[in-house]
Picture 1: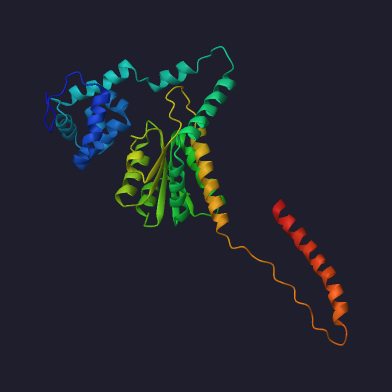
Picture 2: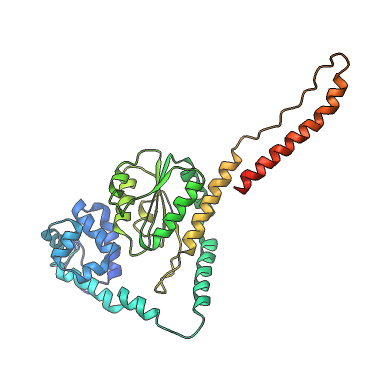
Length: 323
């Protein structure tokens, strides 16, 4: 059994091997085969458990295209390729229900302490492994954007909401892609030069977020990505990307690293904006003309009047700060 571009293929190919070949040949595939390759990379459990008809409907292709896809990678038919995905499930990849209910079963110990330790560990990894030059590059991209679109679903959704909140507080024009209302596709289509897409996604990557990133990349819209591996579909199509919260253990994985990164970006943007504000120098007070010998009296009275003005301004300023 050989694969489409030549060369013998091991009949006992592992998922990791197939995954590497899918990624290596992705750009050379036809658009329909790229859809299937993306689905295989993003949701291998779906390919392991579903029928050809269901997979074809999900990828918006004909069932015959799936057979052609399998043959392109050296399989006699889809059943041979599907076996690779099934073995992945059997040999190690946990089913979500088993993972969630199995790992959250009652155990001895302080669960709060363990959860807090996991959050702290994620922040420590962020601090130790994040290249500072990437932060500077991302801040530059976001600060210069005419409009920032933010994309994130499932575990990434609170991260995207926090980023949009922070940008709004800085009076930056931004919006979260409206996946719930079905308008995300139109928002992506409306992106133009000068806009930026900031996307957050972790495995298993939301296909609609992956599609938005790929669409922006193909149209030369800058993409800032927050993800969990350097080989994720977001990282591969981003102008700059960050790897955070990459601990694969635990049913409910932390997002503290992503939140910490977002807060850093927001504070850096704010600091940059503050450094460019013009410094307003107080106007020099001019002495009134000395008319009829009254100049000296007016000059002695003026400082007291100015002091009262300053007190009134100070009271108004404190009122704004309290608000």
